[in-house]
Length: 127
Ligand SMILES: [Mg+2]
Image 1 (cartoon, rainbow, N blue to C red):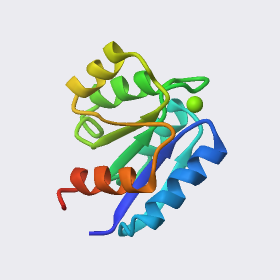
Image 2 (image 1 turned 30 degrees about the vertical axis):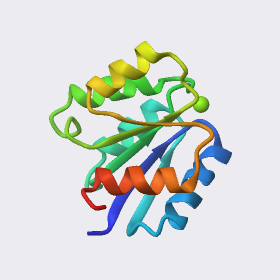
Image 3 (image 1 turned 90 degrees about the vertical axis):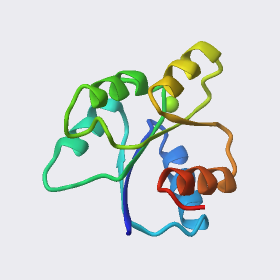
């Protein structure tokens, strides 16, 4: 099934690198929506009739960071079960552990296209 993806990162360069990696990974992507912070991301998630299959989110962003965005997603019936992949420079084991406990996948910046491919495939249940 073609995937609708939402990429949330305040860096335009990073968003295009992630997008390029998704294309290189040969994933079946129907649409890749983009947002520059958590608040924008939430408004795309809550907009009808868009249904997002996977959210890729940065942690450090202005206006609303990734942790708060994830927390708000978990509190909302419509968005609480959408798989989340965090791609971040975050170094704190405690914060990463907290994310993993919520079922969030994690990739460190800088990343390789293969890491994105393997993680995304695992998230959509393919090998
Ligand atoms: Mg950032």
